[in-house]
Each structure stands twice: as structure tokens, then as C-alpha cells.
Length: 333
Image 1 (cartoon, rainbow, N blue to C red):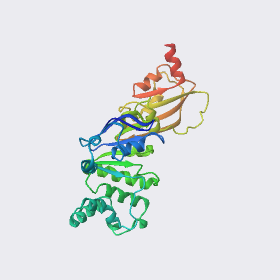
Image 2: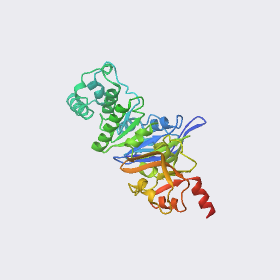
Image 3: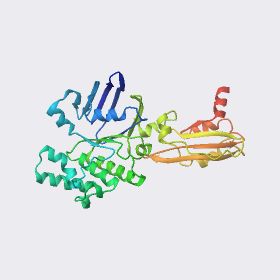
Image 4: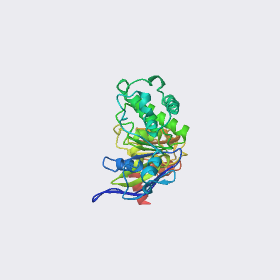
């Protein structure tokens, strides 16, 4: 478990992290997103104890890194495995010997090293590449070696710092599936530092948006994505290009705001009370399941206009609506 409380980091007069508080439970994946310069890399370095915070605490499995020094800190840091954007492999060492490196530094016996490396090679799907050199591997295979090496000392927590950046979509998906499997197998707490919203959608249980050194928004992915006022929700489920409106009808934006939206809501609204001969056209739509929850957004054109009470009809089905027509109706009421 990783607990970050009121974490502040300053470099001279510049505050890079400003009272950041986050927690990641065992078996949970937290994604930290944000623009360049938001403080994500500094957060990563503070969690892995490569940087000392100016104030605040970073506790890993109950141990406060800010209160440890020397051998105690070195021992505690074994609880956090780090996966970097580009796996820093030693080019003259084979895959197996790269994975073995932390164990060798620890002074483990050769038999225990061989056993652990063999286990990790199997876990990351590289048993047949044990004797290969890094130059003989693809980018995804190198990242798998980096993951195996991060797990060599048996940490209960993983920190992934842009680990899928630069990988093609298929390789990214395979790495994310591997991390998800390892999380389940070892009950790992994982922090993903990423700028890729597809990564968040694919694997994260929770997400936090860091901007200007502060947490602007955070929560469970399935809660955030159902919040119609959430900036993160719009980044996680972006608007799709829509077709041009066929006429001068009203344009409505409809988004999921509940876990109980009926599957047939789009086809059933034509029978809404008072709709009559009004024509409903779908200009754009994006509907899918994320973390087992149906989410989505659609842009509709209604000609010549929606009847009074149509917005309430949609809201009764767990949908959020935005439309100039709705605003005018509610102001008049």
C-alpha cells in the first residue's frame, strides 16, 4: 500500500508539488495524468525515494520514507519496483542476467537467483529469450524484461513511469494485460504515471489529474466517467467528430450519468410522450464499457424541436442532457 499525504516538493523558490495527497490500496491501480510540467515525474521520484520531499509524507506498507536513512531506507525501497519509460538494460548482459541484477546486488545465492529469474521469465512470457541480448529484443520485450527486473526483489508495490510511451497499440495492450495479471497474482499496488488516456481506460481502477503541482480531480474511474461536469470524464471519453446537422433542428448532447441506463434508451426515445412526428438523428455517438460500467455520449438532432418534458424523459433513464433548448425551457419555468 502507498499513502501520500500533503506531499510538497520545492526546488528553490519553485513549488513543483503542492500538498499532494493520494493513496493506493493493495491490488489497486491508480493512474496519475496531467500535462507536461504538471509534476508527474517529481511525484514518481518522491514515491521511489529518489527525491526527498520538502514536506509531507510518503508511506509504503506503513513505512514513512521521509523518516528513514541509510540501510533502513535502502531496505524499505525494495518494497517499490520501478518500471521506466525505456527499460535501462545493460547491453552486454543477457535477458536472464539483466533480471538477476538486483538479486546479485543483494548478495543472493546463485541457486536462489536462478530460481527467481526462471519464475519471472515465465511470468513475463520470455522463457525462450533468456539467453538473448537486449539488442535482439523488440521494444515490448525489453519492457517485459524491465518489468521482471522491477519484480525481482518481490515488491508489493509497482511504480510505472510512462512505461507504455512510444510503444505501438498492440504492444501497449499486451503490456497493460501483463501488468493487470501481475497485479492480480501478487496483489500489487500500482501507480501508473501516464499521459495516455487509453491506458487509464484500459487498466486503472482510480485516476488523479495533476496540474500545476496540485491534484485537480481524483476518484474511481467508473465514478468520474459518469460525472457530466468532470473535465477528466471528457478526456477519458472524448467527443467524436459529428456529422453536420441535417436541418435547423435542436442539437442535444446526451451523456451517461448513472450505472442504470437502459440498453435500449436510444431506440426507445422515439416513443417519448409528445414527440409526435419529430425526427431524431444521431450526429455522433460513443458508447462502451469501461471497468464493467456502460458509459457514453451522443449528440442528437431533433427536428423541428423536442416537446416539453423530453429532457425529463431522458433524465429518468439516467442520462444527463445539454441543449440550448433545455436551458431556455428551464429558465422559463
